[in-house]
Length: 259
Figure 1: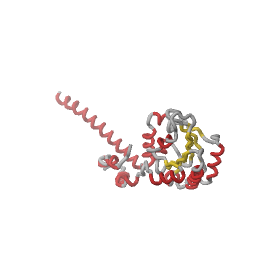
Figure 2: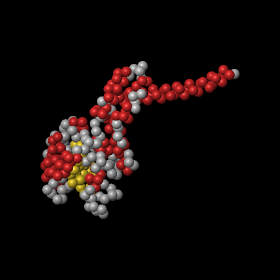
Figure 3: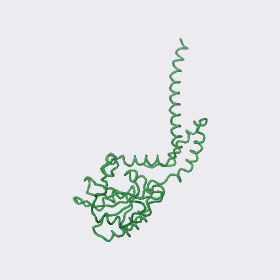
Figure 4: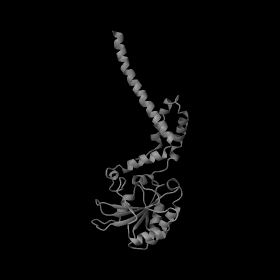
């Protein structure tokens, strides 16, 4: 599913119907918005393959995207396995989703991944950047600064996911190492909500990604544009209703005149 400039431009004919409306200022802003739509809307699935390959080679850390996340998490799982493969996925972001506050904690996670790369029994490591992957983050209802621990088993086995939020400004690599060395999920939250990536109702019925796109559009489209669109649709419905009423009145008037 993609939202493109061409699909939004289908709304342009509606601008003529609002010529005498009190929304003239909104109309001008909307036209300007449409002209800049391609550059205004962020990519819902930005993935730098070269950067991902470098991260994999240097730190044995994968970069998750909307296209590869499920295959990546299942990749080390052997058929018939009864012991789960543990994945640590750190959710991060830049200016849009983390307001620039994730640099410290992301650096700590990257340093931890480099340490774990030399340990055979360490968890598999990956990160998810919500600035680059807003649809994937929305489909998980994932927020930056959170560690997701996946216990992966072969399908169709249930997947347990544990969440723990870390302080964005004070977390160090040693904090992640301590969590690993303790081997405990005591301070984690077991994820069992509607947005569970594997077993939640939205994922089960294939609605997670469509819902994520709706949330993304509501977030990126300015409020004044939504008001203008609603106004256009309201006027269109009212116009159709009036036309239908006129169509019903004319035969009745003609019949009365014939009498």
